[in-house]
View 1 (cartoon, rainbow, N blue to C red):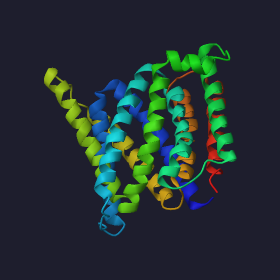
View 2: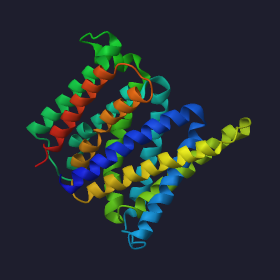
View 3: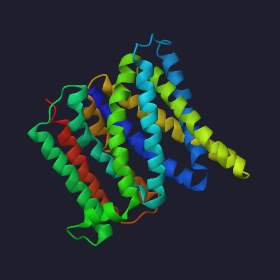
View 4: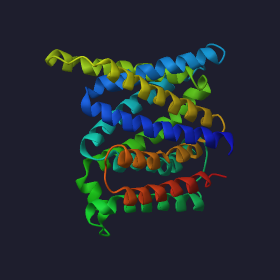
Length: 293
């Protein structure tokens, strides 16, 4: 497989593990502290990788604006992810992120000059079909199932908004890489996100006692932080070889991994229907990958 594709698949697998661990830990602990710990851990790992790769690189003139923009968008996205996790299963919520490549096909001309092609339209339709298959079992299998899911499932709606936010943040993430390297700029972004969620956790501490996290919980938070660092590093490496729609479309196969983790390890039901829906969405993502000449 060509290098960028391998990097994107590694990022996809790490993303699925990160989301699964994030939902499990945030359900048992203060979600803001879990987010803060995972981002700060990822920042340390990325900074270590930066040093091991040859030291700090000279930043470009647009690095700070790109960092500010993607930090804001990712903070908003994660707040919505937490809301989605409180309303729906991860195996239904996470695959909604497969719509990010569809949004990228629309906005990429503004950033990269890429055009929407007939093959790209087929890919988008395939992703929507996968969404239908994924949602139908929860809504009785009617033809209106996806619309019913959007109306009744707060988690689905929240994750669709997250998909749009990630489309725009992905373009800024690539700018961060271009203005620095695969590690330096992203370590700054994750550090800022970690500090943001640490500050958010403050009012909850002031409003009442927060039980200390036992060591095994702290280790788990560090582990999902490591997965987050792997996800970011893999995707950033893919950005060096491919346009954003290519890299993100292949990364969104993480929905398939999320279904498997949610059903096999999380005890969520409906593995077959959700696996079929996620598989169709993954096929659509693959078609989108091939749509950019």
